[in-house]
Image 1 (tube, rainbow, N blue to C red):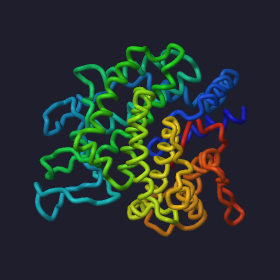
Image 2 (image 1 turned 90 degrees about the vertical axis):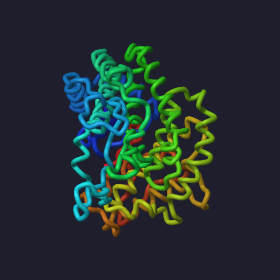
Image 3 (image 1 turned 180 degrees about the vertical axis):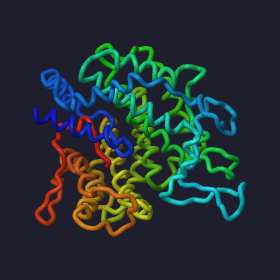
Image 4 (image 1 turned 30 degrees about the vertical axis):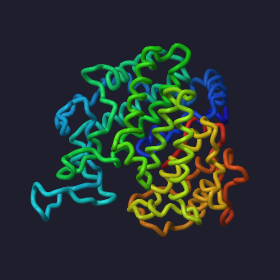
Length: 400
């Protein structure tokens, strides 16, 4: 009972803080099966009730698609995903049609006039929620709803999203209104959506046809990520944007066919991933590029969270990034140690949005204790950051 309550309580935090929550790509399947057995005997727990309540809300939602947007990209193709750059604004000093300028940390609300990004996040959250509800209850109505959502977004020729981001995070007035490598971060939510898909892929959940359709779509999208000019530029970026690029490439490779894509994934890990990991962290475990942001703590924690996800995926391809030591230090351990040390005192870098320093690294500590040889958490001023119970790690990795 204790383990199950901890797991579902942590999942409840995800449901209440969707904007910041991050799941990692199905870790401990054995523990998942154990927890499912516990759930059958604790069906009235408030935590499980919360999961079911949220899934019931999803059941009453209509299917959404990229075809609904009123503003179209330069291609004029309604099936092309389209979004505007988050932190770019009109330059009011240069007139109505002047190129946009960047204001870090200040999201331009006009970007939401295009519904694609909002709907993409929505379907990812909803599929994940349905996945957990189905896994713990075996009620097929959750998988049946997921079938409809997935068909509309990925399969139906009239409504589906084309498998590319040629028009993502567009800066109006620049580059002929074409997409940017920075826009690849928009689809990082698909990684977490696939968590729900996997939870519904057994015991008569999602149909074989739906799984095959999804694998076909993600195969085409993975090819675009790896081979298109925008995709290749994404892999050459230096900050968290590049981290989410590699997170997606590895996650989609695993979902499509882990054996078939093993050579590709291993090559990407041993070259691009390891080089990026080495470059992003200095000898003190700091992430210099993230420290320049107006919400430097949030970006530092988020980026390290992505790296923990990548390390988890790399394990599936037979490569240990947890103990990767190119600078005579285990990079992921040093990155977490630096955040731990600063979680007990005032963060000296800019952080405009309020956040809890201690709670935001709890799950990261638990992961590190299990995965990084010799890592025991850190004790400062009589307090110890060790994280949540290890049994919960097959469900979540918090980034709040």
